[in-house]
Image (cartoon, rainbow, N blue to C red; front, side, top):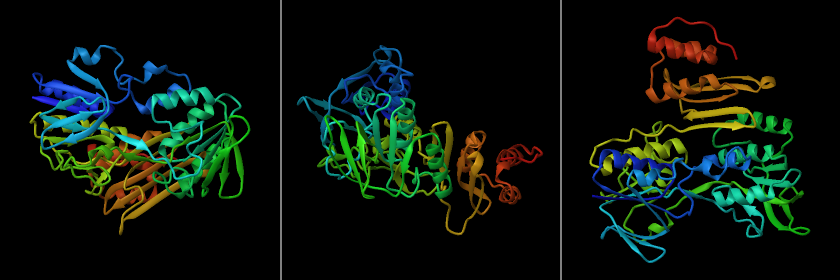
Length: 421
């Protein structure tokens, strides 16, 4: 059996290792289109602040890890997938045949339709090459404009601030991380950043970017303000890498459409990670969840099914945990609530503390927290297990900080003590 994996990110690496474990006599090939060993994009901020070198971003630290596991790596780009004849065409014109194929090609940064985006010194923060370019230009005292204050933008934000640049963040939404946090939490994160010396503009658009003096740039905002920049970083979202699948016979929407086994409409082709339109645990709908825990989960499950080990994907919990300059925020599941559900919030703005719980009947279906790290695992566990809280739901409606007590009481029948925020 020849298993071929397109993509050398977390989903692809975990799939390759799983296949080697559960199907030890098979041929496992992983194709990646970057020259570096498989690495984690989530490690790039640590590279930017010099906490790690390039090797520190690698997913596996032993340089011989994949050869020891008899996993072949091809460094090339796949141009075409021929699902009917089970073969791939590579950029170097070589062809690779497969018995089972996993597409784990991830996503790519969205380039906003803004005049001047092709000028020098405008980068994403998505590849190691991007990281090198950012390190070269983001010197102490330099003027840096970050477009986008979503999850990825806020991860980059902290790294840039630690490089002691003059940082300005531009976000089109009316708050920071608008797809992760509500108005209260998003604006508290903004206030936190402002207090730390980062300029943040929400409800603001970049209209154009033009050349300034020398190598500098001028970033023109819809407010009429113009910002001088030595470096512009675009973090305005990502899109699944499905563009090479035209005429492949594989059905796509926002990503590759799959069933509960992460199998596409072609029974020999699977998908995992950012490119996979997989099941959402909370809604039962099939969506793209571009987060690393989902990619890891997908990679393992897809590999099991490729090897003939029937394994169902129960759905991924929408989960984000973010560290913004020392302020920890998190959101889980249906954090925005559900029709007919109940909710409770508790906020201490002076201490940057916030918790929001969303219920459907007596089941916790979504949550947000700010500055409350001790609840992170419990919130996820309650949502993922659909645990009925019974009378503890009423206690939480009065004091949402008693979430740990509720969990223990419902799972272990342990007594309770009052919580504090």
